[in-house]
Length: 225
Image 1 (tube, rainbow, N blue to C red):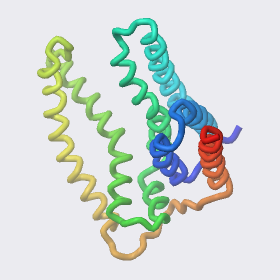
Image 2: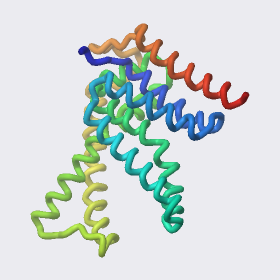
Image 3: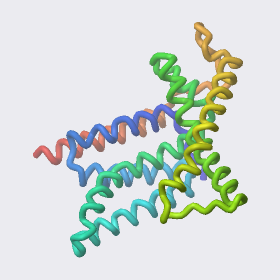
């Protein structure tokens, strides 16, 4: 079965619209609708690992929320999870966006939206830096293990310090590398950039967005009756 290949703008628009709709829609409806819609998209795109991870996290949070009705002592923590759970589908779509698309593809797609170049570059770098950030943490943890420095919850501040200080130095070095790479590729050029990855907005992209928006409008009308 061929995997669905969406324009990155579709995933970005869904992640912008979904959180803002909690102002207008019932929280329970939007939570379920967004979870189902994101799950279908992840499966259609072939992001099975991301689907399994986000589903597991979502189910664990739901389990704690249900248990809070029986054990009132964990209710404050459950209330925090209620808010966090609403963002899990969006995190899954962002993970798919970072995994499936290169920086050049993201940059090419965002430039078709006619938004300021500065914002385009900032969004692209942010999305592609998150995997690098995670990878750097793994390197730091491996270095701590080789030096016999344990990461323990008994001394969280000290352990966090061992993580964050090297990460800050790596962030400074990586920012210089990213800036240099961008300048070499002409990211500051005033003229319109050409790209090998030409991202067109196809029929299937419009259909996905229409279905998503139609579901939101349908939910709004239903709960306003």
